[in-house]
Length: 431
Image 1 (tube, one colour):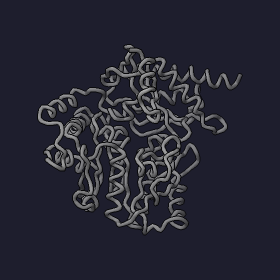
Image 2 (tube, one colour):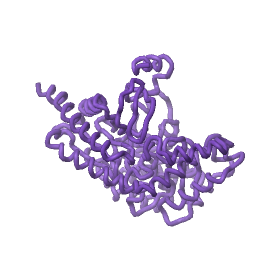
Image 3 (spheres, helix red, strand yellow):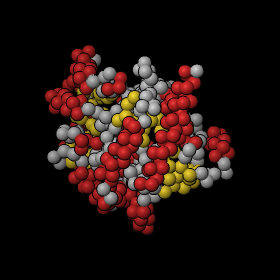
Image 4 (tube, helix red, strand yellow):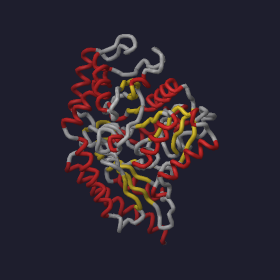
């Protein structure tokens, strides 16, 4: 069946609220390559939105999941627990940053991890308020929407959101906002809107995902830690998109000299199988009473088995170093094209969590050029994703396991797509 025929079926059967970014329907995938219903091959620079850092169908993950299926697929951990749940918690507790005792909770989705982190923070502190950042993304549940700092398309039309959530600007060098500005905004918030003694937590992404792949400067992270320590506030690092070798470290917080009190994880934790986690200080994680946390599918045995294999693959194949090397190559290619595409004004990101932002000479975001690059690349067999509050950022999220020859091919496609898209958009403007 053709992509167009499947699209028509999809439109008549599925809520339009579930958007899609490409018109293709996948039938199979292997590592960094994907084939659609018409047999067309694509290089996947989306990776399920940073989910398959270890590639589509990595043999070690497939083997681990098959072995688990032979034993059992579900018991509900709250009914009949299982050893690999404990083993994965032990490994994450040891791996997460911070020289203190930690404990872990497993859930199913990134939004669910964020919801539980807020519950835990409120239970531990006895406070209600939460501070988040403009441009941040923390999920589509009601608390997730409240924390997310972007109205379209995430909040529009859904009515009142949970109260006691406050936003401050995130540092974005390309738009003139500094760490000092962000930290000052928190102090102003304490003066004008919320007593710091009522704040349970500050949540942030070490690299903003949907917001535009803006890395949190070290000054911001240190400043947040100081504010939290001063006022008895918990610091939550949302590592749903940044975790598991993507930034050149196992966790993005490993790039900083401070540790969060709680971390949320999901996406590539289980390499394509539904699993999320909250990891944090043991005394904080123990604040909720028994039964206050959990879920029917939380810590699925299949996801747990896959996640243990993911950790083995990252260590065994040196994926943190691989991410750094790939990111350096990508940024070098993009930087070399800036004379030809001067609108590609900012190239950024740690490791292989790289983005390019398109801004014209007047400082105006260029979502039309961004979309043109994405569409041109898709025509040539390269799947790209856009992001950013203005829709003017392309993010590059290939599996870290991508073969050298496939990566080289993708860079050539990207180069040609940038040139053709610029001529189409900027040339049309000039005319």
